[in-house]
Length: 333
Image (cartoon, rainbow, N blue to C red; front, side, top):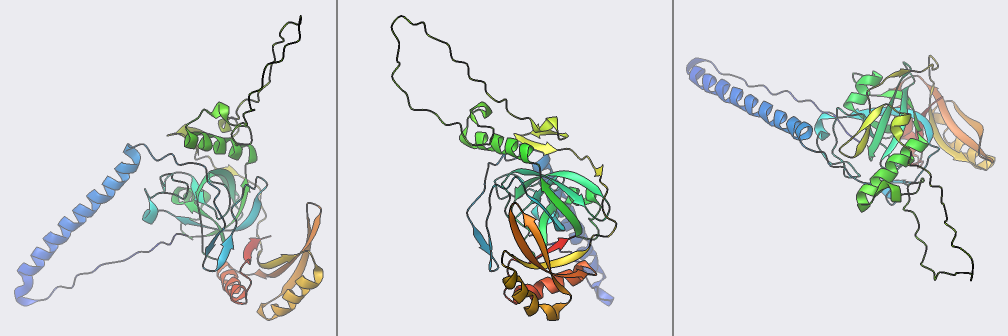
């Protein structure tokens, strides 16, 4: 989604009678730098000193980016591996896809299809560091990346310098339902008590005429209501400006020492279809079919690898996509 660019400016001086001109240029440059610093400080203060936009709940319609279709949905069983990237300075204080204010120093992130907002656990499979992140944006749209994290998230996970990392992203179902309910309530201007445990507004029955049996005493009806789930019961964090924000808590998680990278070109319920794709991509490298059971359905996954590096995975992925397999992705196994 987000790119990071750095530029260096240089001013070449001339000799001789240009000394005074050089002095003027230096003075102007110092003034410009001072103004730039004041502007950046002003932007930072704008985020820190003002109430951030609360945003709302959003799933969204299917959308297309660079020829690839994405289908947002509520998926409270989401658990995938892949590559993470990060974004920050160029988007600081901008508006996220669900209307919140992006702060590169908060633990937030972007995902292509998960509900906004959601809470996910992101684990760096290279060093075992794990944090909770609030998903409030769409992206990343760089092939092979499954999540785009804020700069602070990348720092805590230990991959700010390298730019990407092998990760596992798993949604927290109950916590995600709870913050979705709060976001929906904020959108509608209603109390969280009027939201069902699954996040949807509580249905209201149509009024009916009272029926009274002669001689019978009215019986009081008691309805046990499920209390709203508070995500702070299970996740360290606090509600700020109407949003639950995870705290900067890093957990150490046992992981495999070397997660192997693959490009998954597709998954099929019919073996012959998978085998045809495997044969078509065999020139790109070691290609195989990995069967798996999801629910009660067997799938045959076509994979290329293992691959030696992120760069190698990116290269193979681009070739697989160019061959017409837009749903291909990088996984870690």
